[in-house]
Length: 175
Image 1 (cartoon, rainbow, N blue to C red):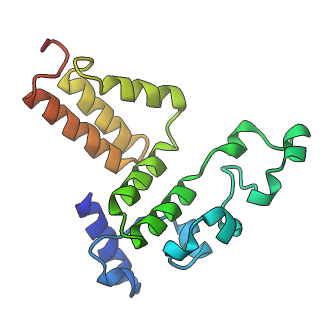
Image 2 (cartoon, one colour):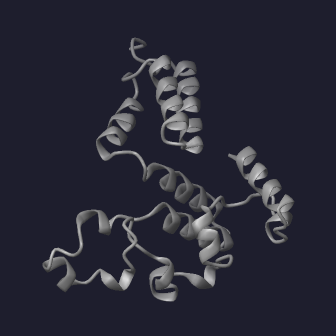
């Protein structure tokens, strides 16, 4: 992940970002998020109460639109109750500023996973159980994550798991 962070920091530095240029790890955010807010800090926690204007549903509904009346009127759908990748990345910024870089990385992984259908995501995680997958199957999931879902952090995680399971004899057929 540090290679990705370093690359993002270099890009930000080249386009004129001064704050990120000094950091060794950068938090990638979408262009939409970058234009909506300045850098967030631990004082911005919790986002929903300190910056409700930044929190929205995947369909774009504002946080204050999600009310019981709107749910009962069927103006709010199940998809409106899901978290967005932008919100997860912003939470990561807050965690990073609080010195919780591991939590920031978890938010980054979670942000990547929001684009994957739930049933496919469960299949992927089941493939990570010991003795469930071959190395080729885990590497295929890694490629799918990278190429289809643009989830490089999670793709790296599956590739690392494939190597680890191989070294520990935890692949399908090893038991």
